[in-house]
Image (cartoon, one colour):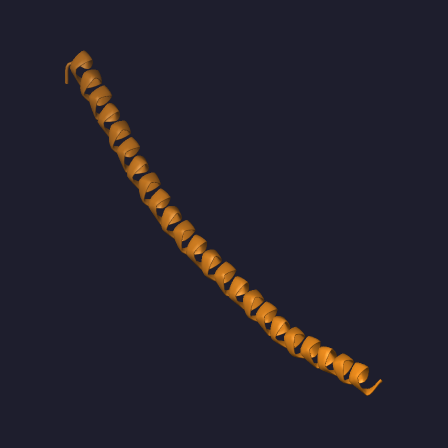
Length: 87
């Protein structure tokens, strides 16, 4: 009977010892996953900011180009009107 109890106690101790390290491993993996997710979110945010800045620069360049085209068209129309009137 004592041998059976000793075997049971040994198995219980083994189970507890293995379970605690498994819990620690699971916690470490969860922490690593959280850190990895945070790094990916930070990287995505930085890429989004860079894309937004690039889009703003492109929009500003397009607006400048459109303004220059309108200005050129107005000057051309004004010159044509002056020539038609004879001034």
